[in-house]
Length: 234
Ligand code: ADP
Ligand code: MG
Image (cartoon, rainbow, N blue to C red; front, side, top):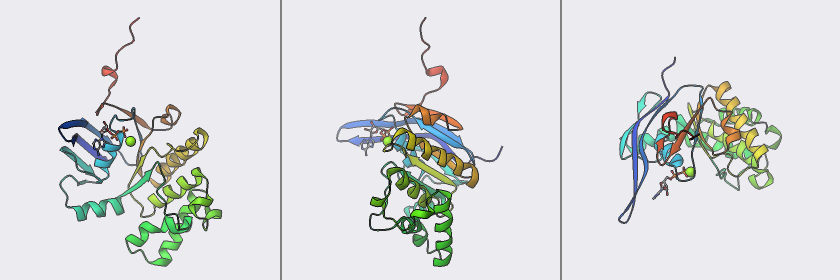
């Protein structure tokens, strides 16, 4: 089997609010391989967003190590984390996060502007990505002229702009109806397999979990394993 793209080892994250401490991650370890779609599930407050933020370099754990694409990211200076977030990881959020005054095509082009991709190459990649997500006919529309599902397709295209090796999607279907949500999850699954990226996707929709290659369930900041799930008493 190929080397894992993501290795999380014994991650711990504690939030402090005054005298109160919330242990958001207790001791979380897992690996994800290239071309794998991993669903992370668990109730609201179980630590899903916290976990994705540690892996994507948006936040730093209190203990433990994260390795992405062979690079240990824990302890990297902010400038190198910025490089990771721009070039190695693509992010998709529940609320889409598109820039309202820009067209779909311009939104998809933003990450390539940040990395100074030449404009001809950028235009070509934007066109390719909009085709990939089925929106080539909507390139010039602004987000408010698109449906929720179409907005999330734009956001997915944007996340893939710089050919990231890792796609991190935090409840990408959270604001969509169930049918549209399923289409978005199917799109992510197709892209994972065609582009060879690794995807970590949080969701609490059981229907979407069936589309994942593997499912990890967080419970109070720790993965729940089969042995820990209490057996139903007969
Ligand atoms: P999920 O994404 O599964 O809903 P989160 O990772 O957002 O869970 O939150 C895990 C726990 O950490 C929750 O108890 C939440 O209230 C707490 N938490 C998350 N972010 C912060 C923060 N910035 N400050 C304090 N507590 C936080
Ligand atoms: Mg969350």
